[in-house]
Length: 43
Image (cartoon, rainbow, N blue to C red; front, side, top):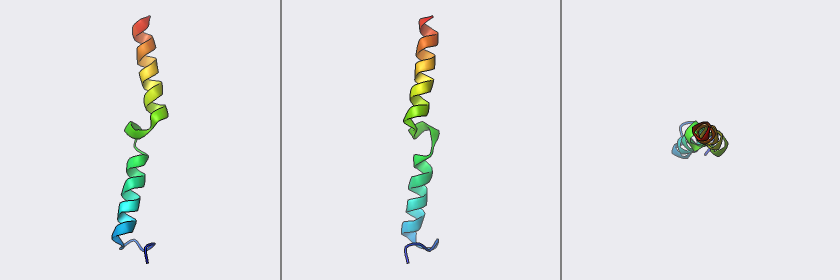
């Protein structure tokens, strides 16, 4: 079954979710950091 850890699709599913959780892919985290840097440079 696809829910077993030995299933290759399950491995791909976990890898995709791990990548999705990475900070570089998180829009809110990146936008906040960019905004803070941009505003600090303006002052």
